Length: 210
Image (cartoon, rainbow, N blue to C red; front, top):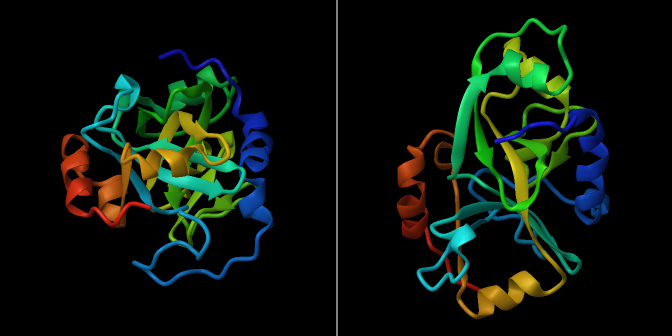
């Protein structure tokens, strides 16, 4: 997987993608509650057996944004490589950071695979961090990678490049045709479950499709 992009621009990119959510007032839901009424953000999309697109075979996607303008999500069950944080930061042009540890890198989706995202627990916050549902947030910056490498980052995190995207009404149409179904999540499923078991576990959590 080629990683040639620079994360310094990504806060602005993510802010643009998620602007409708960022501007909308939202209360923080209690644990295990669904996302605020009117959005499916914070729910899982699980590919149905009828999925005709091989790029999404057995895909489990955490919806980051969904509103009248479209939707965006990060796939959580397609790891592609594991590398040291130091080498990742070096590839992003940050050669001066002394960090420890490794990170597993995921393919977040087929759209703009050069763009990186860190999906993480919501207790961590930076100016460029965007809340998803009160339990999860998303941040795109080299600073969060440095913080993770220096034990100052979020309790749980997942690094992905690329995302899945839908235009206005497209996801709703796919749900109506049972291309996807919805499922609830908990933090262990997002961050701890064996990736080979995530799809089957998500199927067990199926909720009624729209």
